[in-house]
Figure 1 (cartoon, one colour):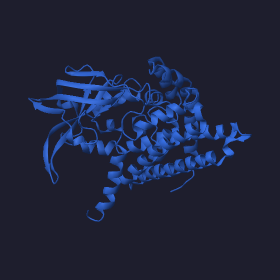
Figure 2 (tube, one colour):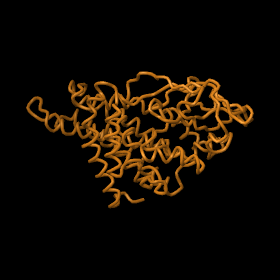
Figure 3 (spheres, one colour):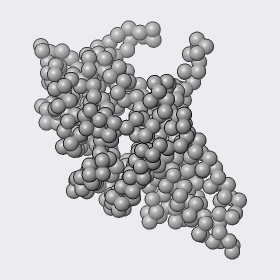
Figure 4 (cartoon, helix red, strand yellow):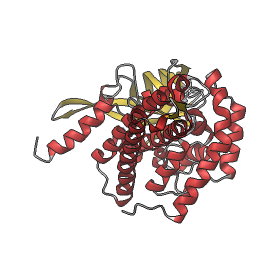
Amino acid sequence: MQFGMTEEQAMIVETTRAFVENELYPHEAEIERTGHLDMDVIRDVQKKAMEAGLYAANMPEEVGGAGLDTLTWLMYEKELGRANYALHWTGVARPSNILMAGTAEQREKYLVPCMKGEKWDCLAMTEPDAGSDLRGMKATAKRDGGDWVLNGTKHFISHADIADFAICFMATGVEDTPRGPKKKITAFFVDKGTPGFEVREGYGNVSHRGYTNAVLEFDDCRLPDEAVLGEVDKGFQVANEWLGATRLQVAATCLGRAERALEHSISYAAERKQFGQQIGKFQGVSFKLADMALELKAANLLTWEAGWKFDQGTVTESDMSMAKLKATEMLAFVADEAIQIHGGMGLMNELPLERIWRDARVERIWEGTSEIQRHIISREMLRALGA
């Protein structure tokens, strides 16, 4: 593994950083003030992202994406992560890789418009009674003649309000396993406007203002066989194959925000004077800076290693869980220490620190809680000994 960036990686990082600072930062204050991301802003950012070659950069070249390897993609995600989440996720969209699992007809209908910025997708897995335990989902899809009939509820579904379609994971049966009966899962494309499919406003939350969530209701929603993504009863296999790196994406965006918070803290510690000297000369502050830098570097290395191993085909679930766990917990630590260094100013909305602090909280929950990541890591160690 090489620790230096290639010329191409350096160019991508530089281009993305400049785009974030010039095109995204100016919109942050308004979104934080209103909690709303205006569609005119989305379209403006979207157009500029396409012109800069940054739109849908996570996708393969064969479908019009940048074709970045995983490590380079994570470097790109880190730079985008410095900005308000709603801005970079919606305006610089990265369509879900799971769209690659579709048939030629499904790709033409769903993937191509997403690549062109004409449509947005959303993933629907989580339910009120099924978060980390997806096998416990209650929403079902049952055969009825030649169709499927969907019933149930999904919630916490990100940006479903603007999505043109949802990729929904539904229980389609039960299978016996060594640990007892488990639900079989199938993935479906569900277009907005389909009878029996309703998108309701979700919950207000403390993190990522402007980045919405919704509740999806299915009431005898009828779909044809053509709506199945992948194979029937193989929804988990589809998700595992195409969504494997999402934990690393979360880790990478956390790195960007933590780096921004640390940069503000270093500048403030060098400029702010108390008792006749810069506060950075006091051990109580300088040690904070050292610890913040240490934790950020450790999270960087774990994330880059996992990304590199993903490209080599040697990454493990534990590798990705370690990166996600470390980066999300590191961000919480760095954001809190940054505010402590700034004192009262750290909590004022003139600086991005209070936003970074608020936004950090959700990272230890979505894409698998910290407890789930620790479970995955320990399980992998114990399985090697047959436990």
